[in-house]
Image (cartoon, rainbow, N blue to C red; front, side, top):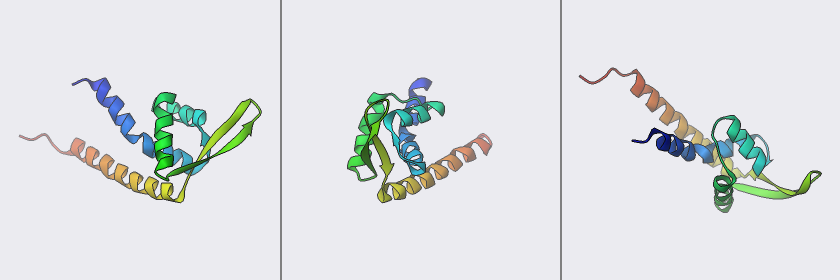
Length: 112
C-alpha cells in the first residue's frame, strides 16, 4: 500500500464538501478557493479545481458571476445555490458519521 496515494485520495474525496463549505461562508473566485484549501493543507492545483467547480455548477450546486478587477481581467466569483446548501448539509452529516466511525475503530480494543 502506498500511503501517499491513499492520503491524496482521501483529500480528493472531501474536496467537494470543503468547497461547498467555503462558498457557504461567502462567494469567492478560484484563486481564493485554492489559497483557502492550501492553508488547510488540502493542496489543490487549478487542474483539479476547475473541473470540480464546473461539475458542481452543472449539477446546480454552484453559480457564478463575473466581477471587474482592479488587478487585471474580470474574475469569476462562485457562490453556493440553495441546492448546494442542501448538498453541503448532507455531505457534512455524512462526514460527521464517517469521522465518528473512524474514531470508534481507534477506541475499540484489538481483536484477540
